[in-house]
Image (cartoon, rainbow, N blue to C red; front, side):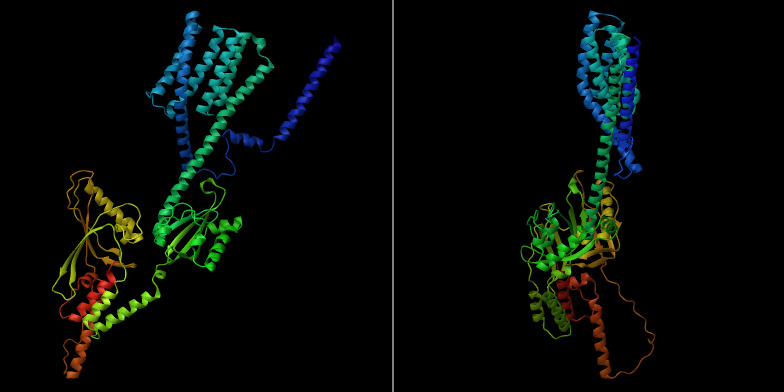
Length: 615
């Protein structure tokens, strides 16, 4: 007998020693960053490769997480309402077969669960975060109470296994839906309930080490699974929030590029056009779809292609530190000549930026901003013709050329024919009493045929003639006035002074209206009718130098005929200089002041037709 006792003691010591060694090895193997990984998986920590969250991101994260929990609970209610109904039917049968306090309690708990899920499923109760917080302990308390109560109704092993499976599933489902907020306390309560039910059903001897191990493992699952789900949800929500912010920044950046440059172009890792190609179509004046086309095929000249490849490769070969420093500076720029399908060369200034991990891909993308060099579009011959035309015009004013030659030179300038599909009607008020048939008034009526972008002369818009820096305030003022008209407030006329617009013939030249009036005299029969405004601009005269008063007004002197003719010549030259700084409207309509010569009127009318006619 003593030998058996000693043997059992030795076995226990041996087992304890083996267990101690195994525990020491386990702690040594996991003493590194494994516990930090477990804490991060449970949602208690943050990953090191992600930047810390700002206060606004944290608030948005919590709001989105609450919405996800609400959606999960609503979808779970659609399934559990049927399970609760089946449970009510089973407990009704048990109550009918063995009516007592415990079976009545089970039936009441089942009915209460069914009512909760039914109200949520039918939408009679608005599910909010304020409602989810008390529902978590209520529903878990119902399951634990039913687990303990059912032990007094039926003590068979078969019924205990069924109760154990139902309560374990309910614990995990509710833990996933409600999160790890109270998972530790709820798991401990479930372990106590299971142990109590086991002791009532099979006696205290059933609480074996294996049963305790099973309860510890189940409690760990009840704690870990909600933590894993919470961590995964947080990571996805944070990624979604930052993706939305990035998309908003990219959208604003592209809108800003439209005001700074002529457009942007996205290339893939093989330098092929990726995405929208409207910018290229507008620059090259073609309707061809360049999607998937290598950009090198559009560059004119082998040397320029090689320069572009080196330009892009220089950004790719930068080390990580230099790339971070270059991101803080302005992007690199290169002038590239592009050849259109018609053979025309368009020179553009290209700025290049790398876009790593765009659309979740590992390959790099390239974002290019394109700015056209408008001066390169005009050939040298056209510039020479314009210089010769101005020289001829000057000679004509001095009386060197006749009116017939001037008319011929004006007609020779008509070398281009433009089509405008949206131009529906043109009404001109002509002055037939003048030699050149002056246009005193003009009325154009347009009708929009399509909302798509046009490469030619499409529907005229106010944004096309406004300067980029003036458009934001200009459009805000007009839209605010249009909203007042749409509401039926009938605002009074508004004054808009100092409006600068582009000239249709040259986008680099501007014209300023010193006085403007905005009104809306049109009647609107229905709220859906469009709001029409009238913007009337006047006073286009440039700034004139103030006349210096003569200090010798009272001095008179005798003049010889030769000096008198010299003075008349000087006055004629002064009048000619005064005519050259006339307002654009007087140039366009051919108005002349008193004392002007007929030749000067005709030549200035020709000058207005050449300078202000749309190209």
